[in-house]
Length: 506
Image (cartoon, rainbow, N blue to C red; front, top):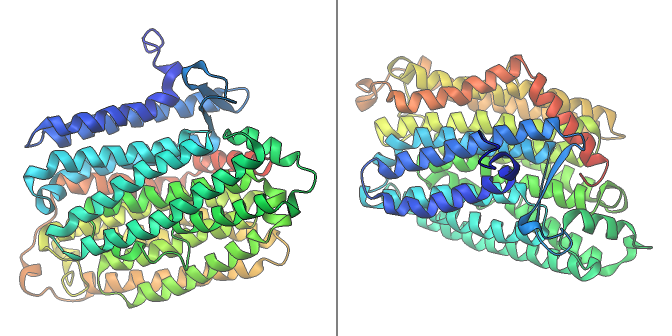
Protein backbone atom coordinates (compact mmCIF):
# COMPACT_ATOMS: atom_id res chain seq x y z
CA UNK A 1 0.00 0.00 0.00
CA UNK A 2 2.71 2.46 0.95
CA UNK A 3 4.77 1.64 -2.14
CA UNK A 4 1.70 2.13 -4.34
CA UNK A 5 1.43 5.70 -3.17
CA UNK A 6 5.22 6.15 -3.48
CA UNK A 7 5.62 7.13 0.15
CA UNK A 8 8.48 4.82 1.13
CA UNK A 9 10.83 5.82 -1.75
CA UNK A 10 10.27 9.49 -0.88
CA UNK A 11 10.61 9.26 2.90
CA UNK A 12 13.69 11.53 3.15
CA UNK A 13 11.89 14.48 1.58
CA UNK A 14 8.53 13.71 3.24
CA UNK A 15 10.19 14.07 6.65
CA UNK A 16 10.72 17.75 5.79
CA UNK A 17 7.79 18.64 3.53
CA UNK A 18 5.13 17.12 5.81
CA UNK A 19 5.81 19.46 8.77
CA UNK A 20 6.51 22.35 6.38
CA UNK A 21 3.09 22.15 4.75
CA UNK A 22 1.41 21.00 7.96
CA UNK A 23 2.86 23.90 9.92
CA UNK A 24 1.56 26.46 7.44
CA UNK A 25 -1.90 24.86 7.45
CA UNK A 26 -2.01 24.92 11.27
CA UNK A 27 -2.80 28.63 11.17
CA UNK A 28 -6.12 27.81 9.47
CA UNK A 29 -7.22 25.48 12.27
CA UNK A 30 -8.91 28.27 14.22
CA UNK A 31 -9.34 28.23 17.99
CA UNK A 32 -10.07 25.47 20.48
CA UNK A 33 -8.31 22.11 20.29
CA UNK A 34 -8.06 22.11 16.49
CA UNK A 35 -4.49 23.48 16.23
CA UNK A 36 -3.19 21.07 18.88
CA UNK A 37 -4.95 18.07 17.30
CA UNK A 38 -3.56 18.98 13.86
CA UNK A 39 -0.03 19.47 15.23
CA UNK A 40 -0.29 16.10 17.00
CA UNK A 41 -1.37 14.41 13.76
CA UNK A 42 1.48 15.98 11.77
CA UNK A 43 4.17 15.16 14.34
CA UNK A 44 2.79 11.62 14.70
CA UNK A 45 2.95 11.05 10.94
CA UNK A 46 6.49 12.43 10.79
CA UNK A 47 7.56 10.15 13.64
CA UNK A 48 6.11 7.18 11.74
CA UNK A 49 8.08 8.25 8.66
CA UNK A 50 11.33 8.36 10.66
CA UNK A 51 10.69 4.84 11.98
CA UNK A 52 10.28 3.59 8.39
CA UNK A 53 13.39 5.53 7.38
CA UNK A 54 15.43 3.91 10.15
CA UNK A 55 14.29 0.49 8.95
CA UNK A 56 15.37 1.37 5.40
CA UNK A 57 18.81 2.53 6.53
CA UNK A 58 19.39 -0.60 8.60
CA UNK A 59 18.44 -2.74 5.59
CA UNK A 60 20.48 -0.75 3.04
CA UNK A 61 23.53 -2.63 1.72
CA UNK A 62 25.47 0.63 1.30
CA UNK A 63 24.68 1.73 4.87
CA UNK A 64 22.88 4.86 3.70
CA UNK A 65 20.03 6.15 1.54
CA UNK A 66 20.56 8.87 -1.05
CA UNK A 67 17.67 10.99 -2.37
CA UNK A 68 18.32 13.59 -5.06
CA UNK A 69 15.66 16.30 -5.11
CA UNK A 70 14.11 16.76 -8.55
CA UNK A 71 16.41 13.98 -9.84
CA UNK A 72 19.18 16.56 -10.20
CA UNK A 73 22.66 15.04 -9.77
CA UNK A 74 24.05 15.91 -6.36
CA UNK A 75 26.82 18.04 -7.91
CA UNK A 76 24.20 20.59 -9.07
CA UNK A 77 21.15 19.84 -6.95
CA UNK A 78 20.33 19.08 -3.32
CA UNK A 79 20.92 15.59 -1.98
CA UNK A 80 19.24 14.20 1.13
CA UNK A 81 21.47 11.48 2.53
CA UNK A 82 20.47 9.36 5.51
CA UNK A 83 22.90 7.06 7.30
CA UNK A 84 22.89 5.50 10.77
CA UNK A 85 23.81 8.79 12.46
CA UNK A 86 21.15 11.08 11.09
CA UNK A 87 18.51 8.32 10.98
CA UNK A 88 19.05 8.01 14.75
CA UNK A 89 18.89 11.79 15.26
CA UNK A 90 15.78 12.04 13.05
CA UNK A 91 14.11 9.33 15.12
CA UNK A 92 15.04 11.14 18.34
CA UNK A 93 13.87 14.59 17.22
CA UNK A 94 10.63 13.33 15.65
CA UNK A 95 9.85 10.98 18.54
CA UNK A 96 10.43 13.55 21.26
CA UNK A 97 8.62 16.15 19.15
CA UNK A 98 5.54 13.92 18.91
CA UNK A 99 5.49 13.06 22.62
CA UNK A 100 6.05 16.70 23.60
CA UNK A 101 3.17 17.76 21.34
CA UNK A 102 0.92 15.31 23.18
CA UNK A 103 2.05 16.87 26.45
CA UNK A 104 1.65 20.46 25.25
CA UNK A 105 -2.15 20.67 25.21
CA UNK A 106 -2.82 21.45 28.88
CA UNK A 107 0.41 23.35 29.39
CA UNK A 108 -0.21 25.64 26.42
CA UNK A 109 -3.83 26.23 27.48
CA UNK A 110 -2.49 27.49 30.81
CA UNK A 111 0.45 29.58 29.56
CA UNK A 112 -0.55 30.89 26.10
CA UNK A 113 -3.68 32.97 25.36
CA UNK A 114 -6.22 30.96 23.37
CA UNK A 115 -6.32 33.34 20.42
CA UNK A 116 -2.63 32.57 19.78
CA UNK A 117 -2.84 28.77 19.89
CA UNK A 118 -3.02 28.34 16.13
CA UNK A 119 0.02 30.58 15.66
CA UNK A 120 1.88 28.81 18.49
CA UNK A 121 1.37 25.33 17.04
CA UNK A 122 2.15 26.55 13.51
CA UNK A 123 5.51 27.88 14.70
CA UNK A 124 6.00 24.71 16.80
CA UNK A 125 5.62 22.41 13.77
CA UNK A 126 7.77 24.65 11.57
CA UNK A 127 10.52 24.54 14.21
CA UNK A 128 10.48 20.75 13.97
CA UNK A 129 10.57 21.07 10.18
CA UNK A 130 13.78 23.10 10.39
CA UNK A 131 15.44 20.73 12.87
CA UNK A 132 14.54 17.64 10.83
CA UNK A 133 15.68 19.34 7.62
CA UNK A 134 19.10 20.18 9.05
CA UNK A 135 19.48 16.55 10.06
CA UNK A 136 18.46 14.93 6.77
CA UNK A 137 20.18 17.16 4.19
CA UNK A 138 23.51 16.40 2.59
CA UNK A 139 23.94 19.94 1.24
CA UNK A 140 25.95 22.44 3.30
CA UNK A 141 24.05 25.56 2.21
CA UNK A 142 20.74 23.79 2.76
CA UNK A 143 21.91 23.29 6.36
CA UNK A 144 22.17 27.06 6.75
CA UNK A 145 18.73 27.73 5.20
CA UNK A 146 17.03 25.21 7.46
CA UNK A 147 19.06 26.48 10.42
CA UNK A 148 17.49 29.91 9.87
CA UNK A 149 13.99 28.37 9.73
CA UNK A 150 14.51 26.52 13.00
CA UNK A 151 16.20 29.50 14.68
CA UNK A 152 13.53 32.08 13.79
CA UNK A 153 10.74 29.80 14.93
CA UNK A 154 12.52 28.96 18.18
CA UNK A 155 13.02 32.68 18.92
CA UNK A 156 9.27 33.15 18.51
CA UNK A 157 8.41 30.15 20.69
CA UNK A 158 10.59 31.42 23.53
CA UNK A 159 9.10 34.92 23.31
CA UNK A 160 5.60 33.47 23.72
CA UNK A 161 6.42 32.84 27.37
CA UNK A 162 6.00 36.58 27.99
CA UNK A 163 2.49 36.14 29.45
CA UNK A 164 3.96 34.11 32.33
CA UNK A 165 7.14 36.19 32.68
CA UNK A 166 8.17 39.25 30.70
CA UNK A 167 11.80 38.12 30.88
CA UNK A 168 10.96 35.67 28.10
CA UNK A 169 11.27 38.61 25.70
CA UNK A 170 14.80 39.47 26.80
CA UNK A 171 15.73 35.78 26.76
CA UNK A 172 14.48 35.51 23.19
CA UNK A 173 16.31 38.70 22.19
CA UNK A 174 19.57 37.45 23.69
CA UNK A 175 19.22 34.16 21.85
CA UNK A 176 18.37 36.04 18.63
CA UNK A 177 21.53 38.15 18.86
CA UNK A 178 23.91 35.32 19.77
CA UNK A 179 22.17 32.89 17.45
CA UNK A 180 22.48 35.33 14.54
CA UNK A 181 26.19 35.73 15.24
CA UNK A 182 26.59 31.94 15.26
CA UNK A 183 24.59 31.53 12.05
CA UNK A 184 26.66 34.25 10.36
CA UNK A 185 29.88 32.45 11.28
CA UNK A 186 28.48 29.20 9.91
CA UNK A 187 27.44 30.89 6.65
CA UNK A 188 30.90 32.45 6.25
CA UNK A 189 32.53 29.09 6.87
CA UNK A 190 30.33 27.39 4.27
CA UNK A 191 31.05 30.19 1.80
CA UNK A 192 34.82 29.84 2.19
CA UNK A 193 34.56 26.07 1.77
CA UNK A 194 32.61 26.55 -1.44
CA UNK A 195 35.29 28.93 -2.70
CA UNK A 196 37.89 26.21 -2.20
CA UNK A 197 35.91 23.16 -3.34
CA UNK A 198 33.41 24.58 -5.84
CA UNK A 199 30.60 22.44 -4.40
CA UNK A 200 28.05 22.46 -1.57
CA UNK A 201 27.51 18.71 -1.38
CA UNK A 202 29.04 17.41 1.85
CA UNK A 203 30.56 14.26 0.40
CA UNK A 204 32.03 16.13 -2.57
CA UNK A 205 33.43 18.77 -0.19
CA UNK A 206 35.14 16.03 1.80
CA UNK A 207 36.65 14.43 -1.30
CA UNK A 208 37.93 17.73 -2.73
CA UNK A 209 39.37 18.92 0.58
CA UNK A 210 41.14 15.57 0.97
CA UNK A 211 42.67 16.03 -2.49
CA UNK A 212 44.26 19.40 -1.63
CA UNK A 213 48.07 19.03 -1.51
CA UNK A 214 48.74 21.09 1.64
CA UNK A 215 45.43 21.58 3.39
CA UNK A 216 47.02 22.29 6.78
CA UNK A 217 48.52 25.53 5.42
CA UNK A 218 45.60 26.50 3.20
CA UNK A 219 44.51 29.84 4.70
CA UNK A 220 40.99 29.80 3.30
CA UNK A 221 40.34 26.35 4.72
CA UNK A 222 41.76 27.39 8.09
CA UNK A 223 39.55 30.48 8.22
CA UNK A 224 36.50 28.39 7.26
CA UNK A 225 37.34 25.89 10.01
CA UNK A 226 37.68 28.67 12.61
CA UNK A 227 34.39 30.32 11.62
CA UNK A 228 32.53 27.02 11.68
CA UNK A 229 33.98 25.98 15.04
CA UNK A 230 32.90 29.27 16.66
CA UNK A 231 29.47 29.24 15.02
CA UNK A 232 28.80 25.64 15.97
CA UNK A 233 29.95 26.34 19.54
CA UNK A 234 27.28 29.03 19.83
CA UNK A 235 24.56 26.87 18.29
CA UNK A 236 25.22 23.85 20.49
CA UNK A 237 25.64 26.02 23.62
CA UNK A 238 29.19 24.87 24.33
CA UNK A 239 30.69 26.51 27.41
CA UNK A 240 31.53 29.43 27.53
CA UNK A 241 29.33 30.25 24.49
CA UNK A 242 26.21 29.05 26.31
CA UNK A 243 24.97 32.30 27.81
CA UNK A 244 21.79 32.37 25.73
CA UNK A 245 20.59 28.99 26.99
CA UNK A 246 19.79 29.34 30.74
CA UNK A 247 17.32 32.21 30.37
CA UNK A 248 15.83 30.77 27.19
CA UNK A 249 14.99 27.46 28.88
CA UNK A 250 13.89 29.14 32.11
CA UNK A 251 11.41 31.67 30.70
CA UNK A 252 10.13 29.82 27.61
CA UNK A 253 6.70 28.15 27.91
CA UNK A 254 7.08 24.81 29.70
CA UNK A 255 6.35 22.70 26.62
CA UNK A 256 8.87 24.73 24.61
CA UNK A 257 11.56 24.20 27.27
CA UNK A 258 10.96 20.43 27.06
CA UNK A 259 11.14 20.46 23.26
CA UNK A 260 14.25 22.63 23.01
CA UNK A 261 16.20 20.80 25.70
CA UNK A 262 15.63 17.50 23.88
CA UNK A 263 16.08 18.59 20.25
CA UNK A 264 17.51 22.04 19.38
CA UNK A 265 21.02 21.80 20.83
CA UNK A 266 21.21 18.12 19.79
CA UNK A 267 20.79 19.14 16.16
CA UNK A 268 23.54 21.74 16.71
CA UNK A 269 25.80 18.92 17.85
CA UNK A 270 24.78 16.87 14.82
CA UNK A 271 25.95 19.78 12.64
CA UNK A 272 29.31 19.61 14.42
CA UNK A 273 29.54 15.90 13.59
CA UNK A 274 28.90 16.61 9.92
CA UNK A 275 31.34 19.49 9.54
CA UNK A 276 34.18 18.16 11.71
CA UNK A 277 33.99 14.48 10.75
CA UNK A 278 32.18 14.23 7.41
CA UNK A 279 33.48 17.34 5.62
CA UNK A 280 36.87 18.14 7.16
CA UNK A 281 37.64 14.60 8.27
CA UNK A 282 39.14 13.23 11.46
CA UNK A 283 42.73 13.71 10.36
CA UNK A 284 42.33 17.43 9.76
CA UNK A 285 39.94 18.30 12.61
CA UNK A 286 41.52 16.30 15.41
CA UNK A 287 45.12 15.66 14.34
CA UNK A 288 46.27 18.56 12.18
CA UNK A 289 44.12 21.06 14.06
CA UNK A 290 43.88 21.22 17.88
CA UNK A 291 40.07 20.91 17.85
CA UNK A 292 40.21 17.93 20.19
CA UNK A 293 42.09 19.95 22.81
CA UNK A 294 39.90 23.05 22.46
CA UNK A 295 36.64 21.07 22.54
CA UNK A 296 37.62 18.76 25.38
CA UNK A 297 38.80 21.64 27.60
CA UNK A 298 35.65 23.67 26.91
CA UNK A 299 33.44 20.63 27.47
CA UNK A 300 35.11 19.61 30.73
CA UNK A 301 35.03 23.19 32.04
CA UNK A 302 31.34 23.33 31.14
CA UNK A 303 30.59 20.10 32.99
CA UNK A 304 32.23 21.38 36.17
CA UNK A 305 31.22 25.08 36.13
CA UNK A 306 27.59 24.58 35.13
CA UNK A 307 27.29 21.61 37.48
CA UNK A 308 28.31 23.81 40.41
CA UNK A 309 26.00 26.57 39.15
CA UNK A 310 23.08 24.12 38.90
CA UNK A 311 23.59 23.11 42.54
CA UNK A 312 23.12 26.76 43.58
CA UNK A 313 19.80 27.27 41.73
CA UNK A 314 16.42 27.34 43.45
CA UNK A 315 14.28 27.48 40.29
CA UNK A 316 13.86 23.98 38.83
CA UNK A 317 13.81 25.10 35.19
CA UNK A 318 16.97 27.18 35.66
CA UNK A 319 18.60 24.24 37.45
CA UNK A 320 17.75 21.97 34.53
CA UNK A 321 18.99 24.59 32.07
CA UNK A 322 22.45 24.76 33.61
CA UNK A 323 22.43 20.98 33.91
CA UNK A 324 21.75 20.81 30.17
CA UNK A 325 24.88 22.81 29.37
CA UNK A 326 26.89 20.33 31.43
CA UNK A 327 25.24 17.35 29.76
CA UNK A 328 26.04 18.83 26.35
CA UNK A 329 29.61 18.97 27.62
CA UNK A 330 29.58 15.17 27.97
CA UNK A 331 28.55 14.85 24.33
CA UNK A 332 31.24 17.22 23.09
CA UNK A 333 33.90 15.67 25.32
CA UNK A 334 33.04 12.26 23.87
CA UNK A 335 33.44 13.10 20.21
CA UNK A 336 36.53 15.23 20.89
CA UNK A 337 38.26 11.96 21.86
CA UNK A 338 37.93 10.89 18.20
CA UNK A 339 37.83 7.18 18.98
CA UNK A 340 35.02 4.66 18.54
CA UNK A 341 33.82 4.45 22.14
CA UNK A 342 34.06 8.20 22.70
CA UNK A 343 32.08 9.06 19.57
CA UNK A 344 29.57 6.27 20.26
CA UNK A 345 29.11 7.66 23.77
CA UNK A 346 28.36 11.07 22.29
CA UNK A 347 25.82 9.69 19.83
CA UNK A 348 24.01 7.55 22.38
CA UNK A 349 23.94 10.42 24.89
CA UNK A 350 22.15 12.61 22.35
CA UNK A 351 19.22 10.20 22.58
CA UNK A 352 19.58 9.39 26.27
CA UNK A 353 19.77 13.03 27.37
CA UNK A 354 16.83 13.91 25.11
CA UNK A 355 14.48 11.47 26.84
CA UNK A 356 15.81 12.14 30.35
CA UNK A 357 15.86 15.93 30.22
CA UNK A 358 12.70 16.15 28.12
CA UNK A 359 10.85 14.17 30.79
CA UNK A 360 12.30 16.29 33.60
CA UNK A 361 11.28 19.55 31.94
CA UNK A 362 7.81 18.06 31.50
CA UNK A 363 7.73 17.35 35.24
CA UNK A 364 8.74 20.96 35.96
CA UNK A 365 6.00 22.07 33.55
CA UNK A 366 3.44 19.95 35.40
CA UNK A 367 4.41 21.68 38.64
CA UNK A 368 4.07 25.04 36.87
CA UNK A 369 0.62 23.97 35.68
CA UNK A 370 -0.58 23.28 39.22
CA UNK A 371 1.26 25.99 41.18
CA UNK A 372 2.25 28.66 38.64
CA UNK A 373 5.88 28.37 39.78
CA UNK A 374 8.50 25.64 40.24
CA UNK A 375 11.05 26.70 42.84
CA UNK A 376 12.42 24.52 45.62
CA UNK A 377 10.20 26.16 48.23
CA UNK A 378 7.01 25.52 46.27
CA UNK A 379 7.74 21.80 45.78
CA UNK A 380 8.03 21.03 49.50
CA UNK A 381 6.05 17.88 50.22
CA UNK A 382 5.00 17.39 46.59
CA UNK A 383 6.28 13.83 46.70
CA UNK A 384 3.00 12.96 48.39
CA UNK A 385 0.73 15.44 46.59
CA UNK A 386 2.08 14.83 43.04
CA UNK A 387 3.72 11.39 43.37
CA UNK A 388 3.86 10.51 39.65
CA UNK A 389 5.30 13.87 38.63
CA UNK A 390 7.97 13.91 41.32
CA UNK A 391 8.87 10.27 40.73
CA UNK A 392 9.43 11.08 37.04
CA UNK A 393 11.68 13.99 37.97
CA UNK A 394 13.74 11.87 40.36
CA UNK A 395 14.02 9.01 37.85
CA UNK A 396 15.31 11.46 35.26
CA UNK A 397 17.75 12.84 37.83
CA UNK A 398 19.10 9.35 38.47
CA UNK A 399 19.75 9.10 34.74
CA UNK A 400 21.74 12.35 34.81
CA UNK A 401 23.78 10.91 37.67
CA UNK A 402 24.49 7.79 35.62
CA UNK A 403 22.84 5.39 38.04
CA UNK A 404 22.94 1.74 36.84
CA UNK A 405 19.85 0.58 34.91
CA UNK A 406 19.29 4.08 33.53
CA UNK A 407 20.19 5.36 30.07
CA UNK A 408 22.68 7.82 31.58
CA UNK A 409 24.77 4.92 32.87
CA UNK A 410 25.16 3.56 29.32
CA UNK A 411 26.33 6.93 28.03
CA UNK A 412 28.90 7.40 30.76
CA UNK A 413 30.17 3.85 30.39
CA UNK A 414 31.02 4.55 26.74
CA UNK A 415 32.50 7.97 27.55
CA UNK A 416 34.76 6.70 30.34
CA UNK A 417 35.88 3.79 28.18
CA UNK A 418 36.70 6.16 25.33
CA UNK A 419 38.61 8.52 27.64
CA UNK A 420 40.71 5.69 29.05
CA UNK A 421 41.51 4.39 25.56
CA UNK A 422 42.63 7.79 24.21
CA UNK A 423 46.27 8.79 24.91
CA UNK A 424 46.64 11.19 27.86
CA UNK A 425 42.86 11.83 28.06
CA UNK A 426 42.17 10.14 31.41
CA UNK A 427 41.28 13.53 32.98
CA UNK A 428 38.11 13.47 30.86
CA UNK A 429 37.07 10.27 32.65
CA UNK A 430 37.72 11.98 36.00
CA UNK A 431 35.59 14.97 34.97
CA UNK A 432 32.75 12.63 33.95
CA UNK A 433 32.80 11.10 37.43
CA UNK A 434 32.95 14.49 39.18
CA UNK A 435 30.08 15.68 36.99
CA UNK A 436 28.05 12.72 38.21
CA UNK A 437 28.66 13.76 41.82
CA UNK A 438 27.46 17.28 41.01
CA UNK A 439 24.33 15.77 39.45
CA UNK A 440 23.77 13.88 42.70
CA UNK A 441 23.98 17.18 44.59
CA UNK A 442 21.39 19.13 42.59
CA UNK A 443 19.06 16.14 42.23
CA UNK A 444 19.22 15.55 45.98
CA UNK A 445 18.10 19.12 46.67
CA UNK A 446 14.88 18.35 44.82
CA UNK A 447 14.46 14.98 46.57
CA UNK A 448 14.99 16.61 49.97
CA UNK A 449 12.39 19.31 49.32
CA UNK A 450 9.79 17.01 47.77
CA UNK A 451 10.05 14.05 50.14
CA UNK A 452 11.53 15.23 53.41
CA UNK A 453 9.88 18.60 53.98
CA UNK A 454 6.31 19.54 54.78
CA UNK A 455 4.19 21.38 52.21
CA UNK A 456 3.27 25.02 52.78
CA UNK A 457 0.23 27.02 51.65
CA UNK A 458 -1.06 26.11 48.21
CA UNK A 459 1.36 23.18 47.92
CA UNK A 460 -0.54 21.37 50.69
CA UNK A 461 -3.74 21.37 48.60
CA UNK A 462 -2.36 20.62 45.14
CA UNK A 463 -3.29 17.42 43.28
CA UNK A 464 -1.55 15.34 40.63
CA UNK A 465 -1.12 16.80 37.14
CA UNK A 466 -3.62 15.78 34.42
CA UNK A 467 -3.12 12.39 32.79
CA UNK A 468 -2.49 14.10 29.42
CA UNK A 469 0.67 15.59 30.96
CA UNK A 470 1.73 12.66 33.16
CA UNK A 471 1.49 10.01 30.41
CA UNK A 472 3.86 11.72 27.90
CA UNK A 473 6.21 12.54 30.76
CA UNK A 474 6.42 8.88 31.70
CA UNK A 475 6.80 7.78 28.08
CA UNK A 476 10.11 9.66 27.97
CA UNK A 477 11.22 8.69 31.48
CA UNK A 478 10.16 5.09 30.83
CA UNK A 479 12.27 5.13 27.66
CA UNK A 480 15.26 6.33 29.67
CA UNK A 481 14.86 3.35 32.01
CA UNK A 482 14.14 0.83 29.26
CA UNK A 483 17.19 1.82 27.22
CA UNK A 484 19.25 1.70 30.39
CA UNK A 485 18.22 -1.90 30.97
CA UNK A 486 18.29 -2.97 27.31
CA UNK A 487 20.70 -0.80 25.32
CA UNK A 488 21.16 -3.18 22.39
CA UNK A 489 19.41 -0.99 19.81
CA UNK A 490 20.88 2.36 20.88
CA UNK A 491 24.32 0.88 21.48
CA UNK A 492 24.50 -0.86 18.09
CA UNK A 493 23.27 2.20 16.19
CA UNK A 494 25.73 4.45 18.04
CA UNK A 495 28.68 2.14 17.35
CA UNK A 496 27.69 1.93 13.70
CA UNK A 497 27.43 5.72 13.46
CA UNK A 498 30.78 6.17 15.23
CA UNK A 499 32.60 3.80 12.89
CA UNK A 500 31.08 5.58 9.88
CA UNK A 501 32.13 9.02 11.16
CA UNK A 502 35.66 7.92 11.95
CA UNK A 503 35.93 6.42 8.48
CA UNK A 504 35.23 9.75 6.76
CA UNK A 505 32.26 10.57 4.58
CA UNK A 506 29.10 8.48 5.07
